[in-house]
Image (cartoon, rainbow, N blue to C red; front, side, top):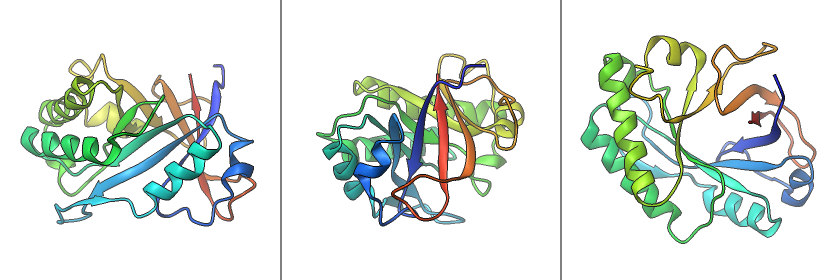
Length: 195
């Protein structure tokens, strides 16, 4: 499998970034714009570093996309999250997708495959209807065991699968490590190949 173009995804957990240095080593960045509260929480939150990361990479002319960590357990909650994302990204430019991060075990994993997939589809349709390109971030296990692949057949997949030569699910982007290193940042980074 071709490795594709290389990119990083970052959030509030990644601070003190030398954007110019990092941008010389990657082709794009996927930035977390926000999240719904972890565990039992259901509040909608903006990522504390979203504006800084967006401004920093914009100054370098680096293409970007965003992701939102979802806890939506109903179609109504997915629509609410998607509209919140649209409010966060208003007036910003993205050439990579707006991703729904689907890995919440507290709310989402309790759903049936059909229910969860309909939740994801509702989120993606709101994003697409606003003129953006939508996708799902999911790990290989979840794609194979928690998702109705027929329902989401037309949605681009960003697949997390570490310590393998080839991801277990053919997606449009592969997050191949959570322990990546790039000059311009101290500590670990998620790194990806986009096809």
